[in-house]
Image (cartoon, rainbow over all chains, first blue to last red; front, side):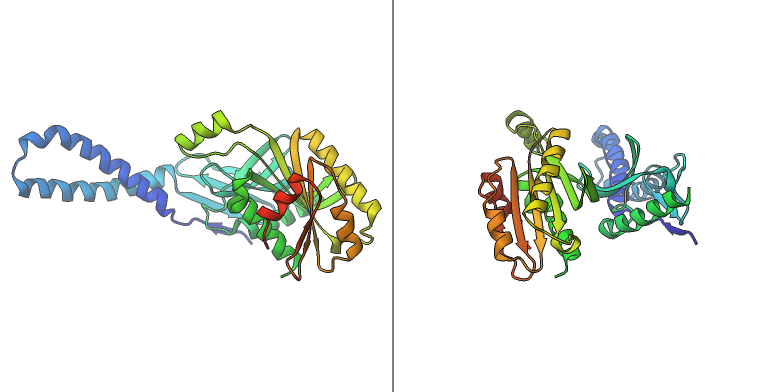
Length: 145
Length: 159
């Protein structure tokens, strides 16, 4: 039976909203001299926040949201609107746990000299426990071939 | 605390805790095989820390980029943990150091009942590039080899 993980990444959602908010704020800097009325300024700020939330959510779904599905045969990882990446467990020979430069933990799967990282922490999976599960799946997968 | 729990604790402390003061340990393998010995865990990294802007520039200009490692083995998984086996372990670590161009490595021996013989054996090791530490799981006491790297293991590894 396959399991799916697609948690909301609050940090990336906040980042997406902030990108949109700052872009709008930059546009406002040029328009500010023409808008002296405080009421209009407040309305613009409110509109800015609303648009940031709406477009930030769209940006998050398009760029950062991850959907990870796995079963005993293999897994699929989709990031944003990008292409789905699918692998069989038996394609890999070695498993390790890595800490990325951002400080997140991932499970690294080695395929000869190449590797593929599963961003376990971003998927809200415990990397230390999930590593053992992946090790089992990889060893069972190898035995199956 | 069980061997597995201790190993995860050490792994966490090396990769995300106080171990980062000595090296940037970034990758951990389980059931790592070197020569004909299987270590329960092997954590590797380098001495050049990653940081943000200034600390990154500082690290790149001041810190040397040495590869380092930490091997862990439990006495529970070995039938006869004697002088001969310890020699075999050190040889495996040495060959791994050479293969991965590491500058130094720690060898942590986790034991539920560390005997005086084993303690004396560890204390007698004088290798300057391998710091050996015997960790007693019940008392938490750490006995280390007679080298600078060995002393550092006691300072940075806490259970």
